[in-house]
Image (spheres, rainbow, N blue to C red):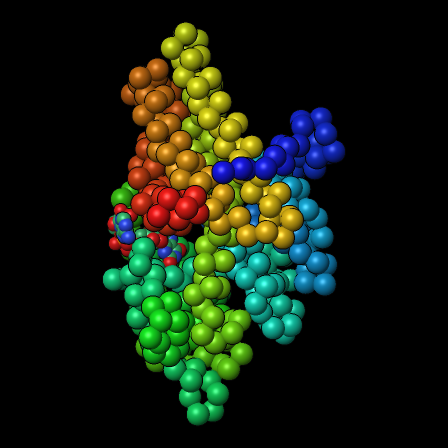
Length: 378
Ligand SMILES: Cc1cc2nc3c(=O)[nH]c(=O)nc-3n(C[C@H](O)[C@H](O)[C@H](O)COP(=O)(O)OP(=O)(O)OC[C@H]3O[C@@H](n4cnc5c(N)ncnc54)[C@H](O)[C@@H]3O)c2cc1C
């Protein structure tokens, strides 16, 4: 399979000025007292003030038209900005999902009114979205989702059901909710997507703590929630094709291999200058450079208007492997118990978070199924 080359912009190339601009922004915009521990959270760190400042600086909604609050820049420029934010471990979670996948979905499938109403707020870093796909008995097998919206006689919809593992639902304004709208003989038929305003009556959001005790996830229950007619996103019955496209936006970004970058940097600062640590760092840097090249190739394909589902699945799967192995590969070179506090805290956070890397956004087995099908192997 070919992965066409879209060269990583050289350090001194035309993107250098943009890179410098982001670095200068980060120097002043990162919250006071932003610690290595905060940095280790990477794109799961939530800070509404930071997202607002990032929006004001023009670094959200970069590729959309100014008609919708965007900045008309290229996907590669966007990639440059994302790389800098991730390398700094900036707290981008508030707007991340909205910018990465909800806005492109609204741009592609939304009505003109939905675009004009919501996209400028996302670009300003003030409107946050969560992902309403997984349910208590339906994760990998999304087609078994049981949440259901029924059209009422007045054209509005009644939504009932439960979503699970919904990251930052408790801090989001909207969910893009995938649910059944009609019975279908075809397994993937009869689904639709809705823009659900999470302040509507009948919605209960309950926290689900992760392994470290932190509250990112939620269970979101819809008890006969009345949605306005224009809450439908895209076409009724086209939910499956739409949600598959959403997943390729979700999987295609550099956060799929850069969320543990703060650990590599902390190691670089703290590790003894031995042959063993130099060798390990060299090995990890080589993996990282290959992933980066592949990720730029995905950005180039998006720029060309293609749907790089297969390529995105490959980068995400290899990226999860890389990030899960990193703490284990570095540990023999520098025992975290013998290192300074900042390395130990970064190590502990990333080691605890690492098992989730091959679950969030689609599990390893599911991605490998997509890759095998894409390569014609089954
Ligand atoms: C950090 C994190 C954040 C998340 N955020 C969100 C969110 O915001 N919104 C949202 O909707 N979901 C979210 N999820 C949920 C995530 O998408 C699901 O956990 C994931 O899709 C797996 O679903 P499941 O947990 O139901 O596991 P299951 O689907 O039950 O899978 C269990 C195991 O069986 C394997 N398996 C399942 N089917 C097959 C198959 N056909 N062939 C081979 N193996 C198979 C899986 O790979 C896995 O190892 C998040 C998850 C994590 C970890």
